Length: 309
Image 1: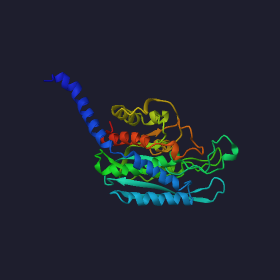
Image 2: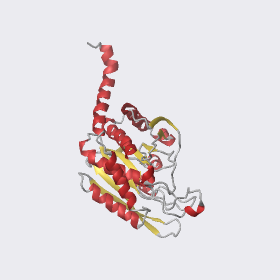
Image 3: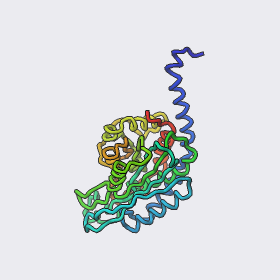
Image 4: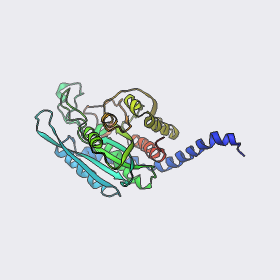
C-alpha cells in the first residue's frame, strides 16, 4: 500500500510515464522505410525552387497524397518579387488541417522549397549547379507525408495543422530576403485573426541526417521555452538520444516570424550540424529513414501528451 505522501509525490509521475509508454508504442508504427521512400520520390522531381515547374510538381504530389486522408487542405496564394528580375513569383503555403473544428490548435511546419543553387560549394564553378535538397527541403515534406498515416490513431489534446511554407530560401545572393511564406502566414494570422488560436508550434528542418543531432535552438528557448523543453523531455522519456537537451545554435528560420509576428510559441527542431548543408551532396544518400522515425516517435508522443502546461 502507498502512503498518501507517496501517492501525492509519485502517482502523477507514474501516470505520465504510463501515458508516454502508451504513446511510444503507437509512435513505433512510424514507418522509416516508407518515409524514406517519400523523400526519394520528392527528390526525383529535381529542384523545387519557388515558382518553378519543380515546385508545381511537388505541390501536386502533396495534394494527391493528403487527399487520401480525413483532413482538409487549404492554400495561401501570394506573389513576391523575384530577387533578381523583379518579376512576380507565385507562391503557395499549403495547410493540412486535422480536426478542423477544434478552436485550439497545434502548428507543425516545414519549408518545402529548395535553394536555387548550392552556394556553399567550395569550388565557385559548382555553385551554379542544381541543388536537390534531400535533407534541406524534402525531409520535412516526407516526414509529414508519413505522419499522415498515423493521425487518425492519435488522440492529441488539440487540433493539428501541418503547414508547408513556400519561399523560405528564394536566395541567390547574400542579402536576399528569406522566409516569405512563414512571414505571410504569420502576418495573416495576426491581421486577420481566425476563429481558432494556435497554442504551440514546432518547425522541423533538416531532420533526415544520417548522423542526426538535434540541439535546443536558442531563439526557440527565448520565445517558446516551455514548448521546447516539452519536446526534449518527451525525447528523453523515449530514450531518443539524437535529441540533446542543451542549446547550441541561434538560427534565423521560419519559427522567427511565427514567434515575433504571430506570437505563436514555436520551437525549431533542426539539425544544423548537417555537413552537406547547401551543397550538391545534400542527396538521399546522406539521409536516413531511421532519423525521420526518431523525430516521428517524439512528435507523435508529444502530440498526445502536450497539454499546454
